[in-house]
Image 1: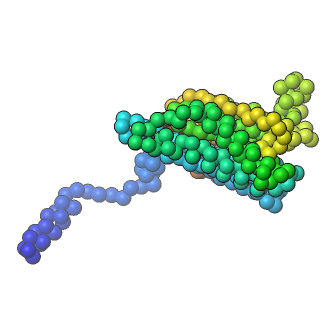
Image 2: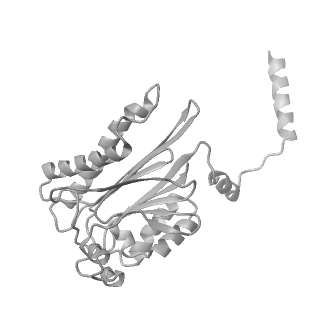
Image 3: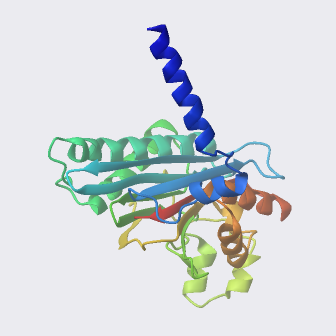
Length: 296
């Protein structure tokens, strides 16, 4: 036995001498970890938050969930991403945003868990549009019941395969950022000044500095009837989905947002740089950012 072990050790030493090895340098590691087309297709996410420079407490809340289901000739990326911004001036804005996040996430995951993870995966009987609509309504009702007088925005994106469904209330935003340098808003603000812009009563420049620019006419927990914006699109093969509170988009121009995302090495770094840019611009509000790299 000892002779066999000595022989084996000698073979290992000879093999190690024949095969040259070298450490993986940082540049090579970045090339490996930032492969442009991961296999299987998957969603890579980063997020960041800041109270801001001029606020003492954070009324924003966020939720991210990403997973990939493969097998049976299927590749199904799945992701749920939510940003909620508790409304300043209303009671318990930070509590309302937390309730909205938990209620929405719980409802959507409960509806999709069984159909997607059963032995014969399929889509639920209800459409994704209906599930998102009902999820927002569930969050709205929970706030009214648990935090009377509280209010919050909510912008949520559900990705299943190559479809993306957006649910939106308030003035947090969702953007699609393409590798071609284009940035496109997927939501419209439910604010008084934006409504006046749509009606042609004021200009975009006037809206940006209007004293009532933060006043919303639609929010979770505030008023009935309640009518969120729900829409579904086919997502592009590559690019990014950005969801953020107004603490980012109100002080950092869209062109700068797009440039930061494009030059960043990964979504996590991009989110940190976006938060830093908002704080450098004065940080007048809470800042919340979720960035998803789309490779589906």
